Image 1 (cartoon, rainbow, N blue to C red):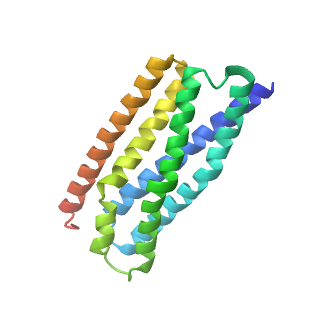
Image 2: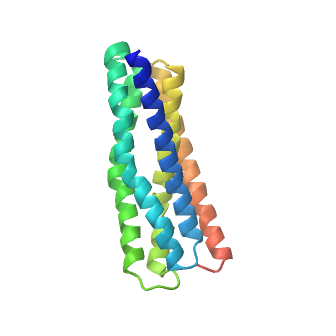
Length: 189
């Protein structure tokens, strides 16, 4: 019974994590399309709140995951090791790269005078590393979900995560380029 309860909490945490990441991506898209600083500030606050909630959500995911690994799977199970390593890497990436980008955007939006979006803020919103990081985060999370569902061996665990990482780079690159074209069509950049 405790395993089933832990699994339920773990799945709720995973749903919460996908919601938070989706809100961040939506906020970045809306900030890129914003024509006024006020619009950027609104969406920056959404992204900031979603980003900060990920600390709690990560604990909701990790605590029952560790319980289930200890009780049923063991840390040497290939898909468990791969998923745990990927989760830790994503957490570190979120706390460093993604977190710093978001803090910089929020600070710039708060410091700027009301009106049109300043060029330096627009440049930050168009930064390729921002979009690559979000693309990789989302697709690697899908990869972790795949690992937990199909429970593959070492080779397929690595192939799934590497494949999702490559897909994330492609998705992030396409998102960054398409957002740049939208901004140019609107006459923003």
